[in-house]
Length: 93
Image 1 (cartoon, rainbow, N blue to C red):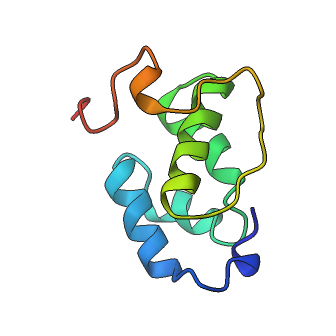
Image 2 (cartoon, rainbow, N blue to C red):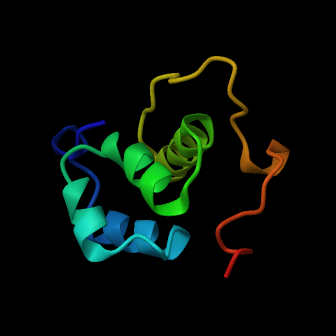
């Protein structure tokens, strides 16, 4: 999802939410996804060592939380974090 097609979203607020949700992502990682949040999934895979499905689910949940439209990237994926069999990033601290 391109940031430039989300005119009602403030990048600084989105960046803050990304940092809060995934504290291991650094400013360089976050700035790299500023105009294309779809790249966030790849950054999560790299930084957290998650498989593609988990990273896409994390990205999808985040996008929904900020009110962005997200295409169904994986129709067989679990859409809510509470139904997933993994520890949340906040719990990993």
